Length: 217
Image (tube, rainbow, N blue to C red; front, top):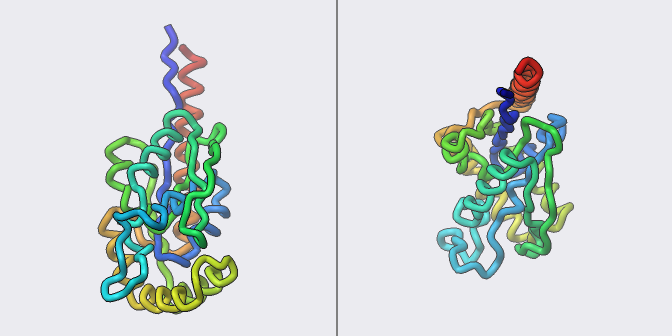
């Protein structure tokens, strides 16, 4: 009788303030990357929060994001290696399509986004969490990187981006503290890369162990 068990697939949740370099770091890891920002709610959703004292939608509040759909996608990837994800247009604040997303034979993948820390506990409870990280750096550097990116991609109007950028720069240390409190380990990029490599190595070890058990059964 075979004692073979399915290879466990787990996720590294990569959080951090907007503009902290999550996407570029995730790409450098060499692991499959799930973009959690594609799970934003759409403009017109009555549950979208507003910035206090402003008519602006608060896209930096976790209430602007569909955590349930994101967790379901992570869980399905860990269970089957594939799922369907929305394609979100940030400039239009709308889901414009959906697409298939798979991780192939990888046993570890990255799910990155500014709300990744908000699902740390749920992923722990599901038994699919490999690690949870929060990128941190200098608020002035994050402000500059975020503004250049958002202007280049035309994500929102210039006045909106400037208001948001100034607000986030002042709030950045509090954002990192909140995400850390939710279970994401705060670190700079070099340490984050080391932890991503360690998680990937642990996943490869699980795969080798499962394969060895199957051959000896």
